[in-house]
Image (cartoon, rainbow over all chains, first blue to last red):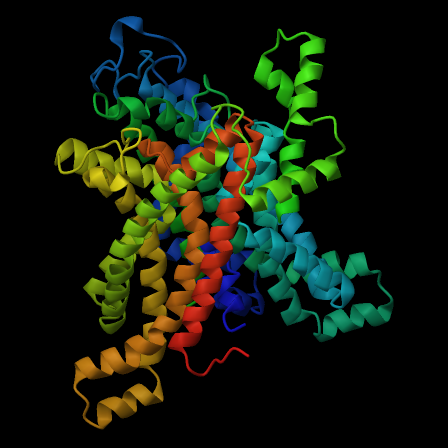
Length: 305
Length: 296
């Protein structure tokens, strides 16, 4: 088997894996979160990302203050209207104001993506810690199950699971968490291997500390930096995946002002009313790129790349 | 794997019989239909019957479309192969070439530009880049049609212009993976001793690049292309849905949303087999390209 290491890699994950060497190196650095924040301040592209991200977070929290209309209000006299002074981004096939809907749509995705990431990161961290510290049978078993989940392409897997459980926000969060956990676990596993034989871990073991304390009290604090970086990368993928799921009709049900859903609903009108598709698409694009700029800044600035 | 497919479709909520006859069906008619469909048999027995039928080519009838599953799935698979093949045909040479170029001009403007295109292709969901491509190429420049719906019974090759944008959408993301991988491995090869030797012994630059750099830099790239087939399946679901193209991905989505169990089982089996075969193909090609590896 010449190429297993590469062939097993989930397709979407090439980017973070390219940086994986950097991650494990950083894990050995003495300082954790402080340096991460420092790196952000020194990178101009990351700062742009932070600003765009902040705008969307403000929208998600307080969109009713900025939205000129109720996002679900029908203006039947003004269907599929081009952008104008009254409707900044135009209206959709029901005469709903697209500007208000784009603002309102930020809330869904900014709730789902971080929560899904949290599920994946917490699950993946626990699995990675266990697999890395208890090598032997337990570790092997965990790793094999992870490999099995990762071997299946993401979209068909999420499609099957969401179709089985029924489409809802909670299920979307759980599914994304499920497909992310093994990928996070891999990063955590690599970091654990680099510290598990160090003296302070041995000291804790000799003191007779319980395994749970060694994992969460001794090992976890030293490997927070790579986990935080991995989490920011994952948030980007979570936005990506949840938007795709709602585009496919597997996310929130129709009346909701969700970006992916708006594109799916309006895509038949793309010839006559391109704005009804273009603005939600640009909203997704700006959010995903902003998150990527931030996580790229965290990974590379200061790492000398 | 076939077991996994079967278990998941067993777990799909909702009674198939109710789905077919509607909510108003009487308990008696429901019972008759369940008997007809063999739903009252124990699950393991049904699994064996289904698997044997599947291997013999009897894939059952679609519950929602009332047509034989085998014909439908196979014709849709052929459509998807045309689309995916077109995308690969365009992407592979272009991205290997540009990846190599980026490695040779490392750190210069060309490298940065290629990297930027690659990064945005990687970051955007396929349906977002698809929408942006439609707006640019179809609505603004009027070069290609925005929809890829093809008349029933027509061959996808007869409507080739309609395939331009869907294929391009797939190509953007594929390009990102392949070009980045080629660049990374080419940079590694360029730093190696044998390339230095080749340059120092006076080989012309083109010969060094083709015979030494490309040959070795292609190894990891081939693996990435093989691994991309899995992604391509997911990409096809999204792209076919966006453009209304009648392919396997769109069929898979339809089956999942409509709880069309026989259709879903057959589509997933086909997807999984294609996925495994393409990974196997990449491994074998790897062996051909890399004489250091011999399969026993």
